[in-house]
Amino acid sequence: MADIFKFKQFDVDQAGCAMKVNTDGVLLGALAAANEPKTILDIGTGTGVIALMLAQRYNDARVDAVEIDTVAAQTASANFKAAKFAHRLSLFASGFEAYFESYPVVLYDLIISNPPFFLNSLMSPGAKKNLARHTDDAFFERLIKCVATHLSPDGVCALILPLETADLVKLLLPENDLQVQSTLSIKSFSESVPHRKLLTIGRHRQIAVEDEYVIYDAPKVYSEEYQNALRGFLTIFV
Image 1 (cartoon, rainbow, N blue to C red):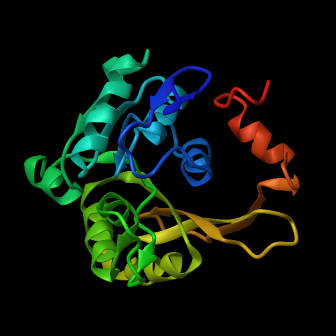
Image 2: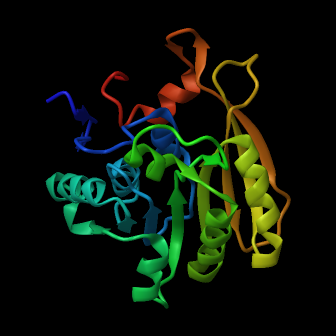
């Protein structure tokens, strides 16, 4: 049972998954905002936790998820089937480009991803960890191109990224007729330097909203905004 992470409305079996349930993932699942999306895609779903959170948040949405790692895809599929939202969840065991080749005209109101982080960095031991968390610039070029092709006219894409990677993604947007609609800089403490950015990307030109988000008020003491965002999901918050 050690690999089971229990949420209020669903369980996540993490067996065989390199990337376990983590703060980045649950924040993205809780904070990504779209205008009542009917179709959602989670790219690189891993355990399936973000897709499950979105299925809980948006009662009328169909949630598709793609995962290239075979074992993680099997685990996510089992998690989907065990959830009460199972009829609205679908898992595709493939990379996102292969998925879109199979479904070339599909459009999504919300595309979401907690993608690979370490651009051109030293690879860590373990092939699964490498697959889950290492990539290069070309990965994001392909990702943003697919987002531009498969986002519905009023749809948005939400990505949680390290600062360096967020800067790279911003540079890729103009050539794909996309722009940042909001940036949420995530900090551990109020006095900390931000370590992640949650970018919301869309087609419409507007003044980008910028804000900060603090996880902790003190060591091991979660901020009120973090508790409010996760109260519907995490059992530690009543």
